[in-house]
Amino acid sequence: MPRVLSVSSSRADVGLLKPVWRALASRKTVELHILATGMYAGEEFQDVPASIAATLHRAGEDMGGQTGFAAARSMAASAVAAAEIFDRFEFDCILVTGDRLDMIPAAFAALPYNIPLAHLHGGELTYGAIDDRVRHAMTKMSHLHFVSGVDAAERLARMGEEPWRIRITGAPGLEALAAAPSLSAAEFAGKLNLPFDSEFLIVTVHPETNSADPEAPMRAVLAALEEAGTRALITAPNADPHGLKLRALLDRWLPGRPQVAFRDTLGTELYANALRHAVAMVGNSSSGLIEAGVFGLPVINVGTRQQGRAAGDNVQHVANDANAIVRALRELLKSRKRFAAGSPYGDGHAGERIAAVLAELPERRRLLEKVFYDGGTPLFKAPWDGSKESDRKRSVG
Image (tube, rainbow, N blue to C red; front, top):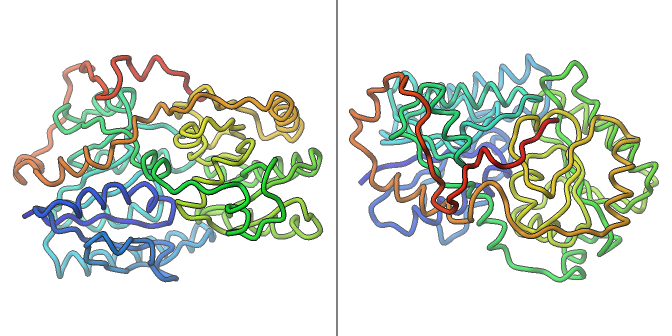
């Protein structure tokens, strides 16, 4: 029976991982463990439903949006804490997700133990954030790849990853949001004690960590909201370096604006309903490109953080410029256009596809014997679509 450890470093990846956890827990042939690290080092980890049978571990430190030195120190402490767990338990595979700085310490700690890594969301591009380098680094450390589409799969093969290791599963976050119970606008507003239940924007802005001015997106978005006078539900910046500075900008701006509500985080159910009832999303969260399309929600993607990432027709890209954001906002609010539901990141059945592979892992020796693939770009095909992912629109920042 394979013993699989899934690493979670924030609520953002919990939303992605729940479908995988449910699918693994439903199988009697897998022993599921969950490592809660990063932001969970400083608070309760209560995001696993009782129906999911898993052994929980908490370890590490929260980066908390601090300085580069503080973040590096927290990463080192998290790597040591993860190694202590690896010293006590023998895992057959560790599932790591995406591109976050607070995710990579567990991957690094697994190297001396030679534990096979399975990586979710590799092969994507986000030129405006350090995340881009983190994602590619985890790709080269990993032995299995669960990718969101054909474009990502082809990119991994060009990076030297053997095609048999690459599985096109789609993004599990799609099914988590689609499966969330639907609330009416009034019910949604009541649960969050919002001063409005309609005609609002959902706004999330993170640091642009590859930029000389990481705070530029937040300044531009706040200035645009000030100019447009639009109702908005704002959620907190993430724990990347400079995250605390963005939060300070936001805290200084919020007082005296009754048309704006701030909630630190929403969780899967409330976030799904925010996407369902908002008139548009503004900011630079990957959710705007990956998940908002499930609800046909128009998205104004600001700045370069997501530059290079595939996007659907519901997404338009603007610079870190308040005037450009206001123009895009007014056009959206004038047209009230909603798009056909869909996402370039899959069909909402990724959880079971990922669980099926983890439950029947290839032989450990075969997983660990990585060689550089130099055989050209194979012809990949997504299980939900006969077209090539590379034919889709891609972000140009």
